[in-house]
Length: 288
Image (tube, rainbow, N blue to C red; front, side, top):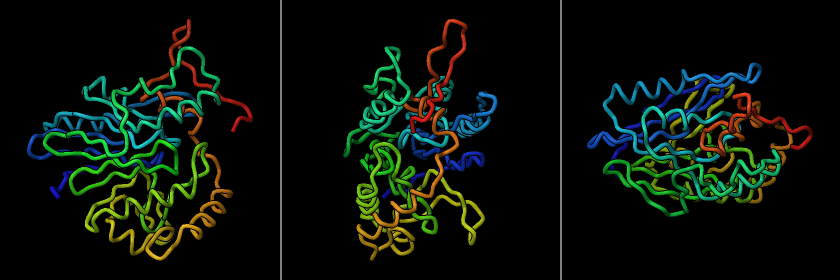
């Protein structure tokens, strides 16, 4: 497998990692899971995180082919629309985003100004679809469970797993969001772990652990199979489902789930401005 050049950008506010994956031969690249800065107290957005990614791409002489989302995140707003306006490229996400759009379209009571058919993105990927980043072939794996729309992007020797797998000492993503399922998540993780042992796995988040306060986001299939506390070799599906279900009952809702979902199912765009020129995000009361 050709080794992929990967540059990581860690956002400490949301514990999110944005990646630039580049083909060193053609200088083409993709951005995976870009972050838009957002202050929920003031409702103000910022672009420092996205601007750092844009500056890196320009300084490295790269051309942006794709802005890829592993799923509609619940813990940060996507900067896809902002970056596309600056650098071009095509936005992509798994085709099951339409299920997420329909679920949350009902939660937020969206009207005719929102179409839950995925048209907000340039391409909706099905399981097994391929596309190019320069001369590199990218393969899409549908890996649901955290959300119905989660996908993993396999590019060269690297795979971008979103929130499906975390670092071995942190384990796995929650599965209690609308449309999530612990049993499905287990099977998706095991599918990822069927990739070659040397495959590099890049997670979208890291929160550190008491024994590892430094943030980290890269592992290998072999390391995960040997040491993941939730899904290493020898842990069966029933044991995982029991653990994950019990653990999810103890978790608070993500701090930014309500604003982020409204933006992320729109490919990083804000809701249409109202007649006063201001865009508004809804806060449904007792709906989740």
